Amino acid sequence: VGAVEKVSRSGKPAVVAHRGASGDRPEHTLAAYELALAQGADGLECDVRLTADHELVCVHDRTVDRTSNGSGIVSEMTLDQLRELDFGSWHSAGDPASILTLRELLTLTLDWRRPVRLFIETKHPVRFGSLVEQKLLEILHEFGVATPPSADHSRAVVISFSSAGVWRIRRHAPMLPTILLGDTARVLGGSAATAVGATGIGPSVMTLRQYPDLVDRAAAAGRVTYCWTVDELVDVQLCADLGVRWLATNHPARVRDWLVTV
Ligand code: G3P
Ligand code: CA
Image (spheres, rainbow, N blue to C red):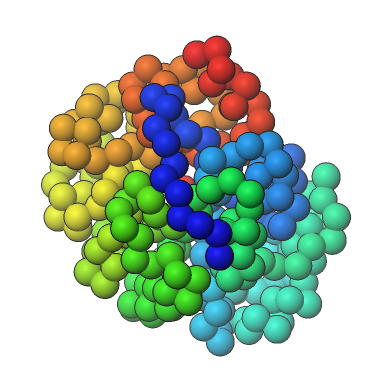
């Protein structure tokens, strides 16, 4: 486990690789995350789902159909069954790859030579009740990252569209930073983030274009803004101008270059 260092604030948004460098490699694979780290990403984003045997794996969709050579519902398959599938070859620039577990991705992140943050998105916590958060916190404790000295020093950030999910994390791990995701100004500009105690809000870039004042309103309430998914120069400029703290992109190398000039 790497040392916990403060990720310093430069004034420009920090770059989070969305599902890894998923513009160039198959999403959520080791190759996608290794490329993002090599390209200098400040953070990595992953989606996590529970398998039938209650392991957390990194996969976006409810099923494996789009991103593997198999078919079926992730939550109805065991980790061993998922390990038999190839999650890389569907992509034009992909080699055969096995599914990544959250533990494997945490190991990669924490062992990297720079302090990098892992933004872990819980998908559909409602289906399993609080089990997703329970398992997630178990793993974060196991890796020694569940109780950071402050949000600024945390190597893990839990992000979710589920306010109940964010609330459960805040309740059991109050020092862990959390982002309440949303794609409507109603959710993010209202009292939801306050009610669940999220340390930040996570609008989509479309929402941010429409409601740029969300960033200032969040800042006034002591919250940072994490914007997704920012792949265009004009939007990188918008995020920089507004003071967005983190931007998630499928193209970390390109966005890092743009950030030098904006
Ligand atoms: O980083 C947040 C973003 O990933 C939310 O949307 O569907 O890509 O998980 P989605
Ligand atoms: Ca996600």
